[in-house]
Image (tube, rainbow, N blue to C red):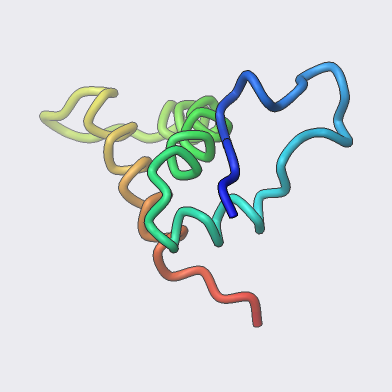
Length: 82
């Protein structure tokens, strides 16, 4: 079963058409990089917002964002439905 997870197939004007996060995580855990990319695009702004409230001595804001995205990757990898 082939499923396209491109942003062109997801309508932003219709919330019903958005792919569910649980479904995207399941696809990403199965090795679908397009699903992982969609999750990252969806939550990049949230990661930036959270990273902006922290300060890293000797570091840059991009370092904190990268750490946040790494945390997002680990959350996808370790996600359990139970």
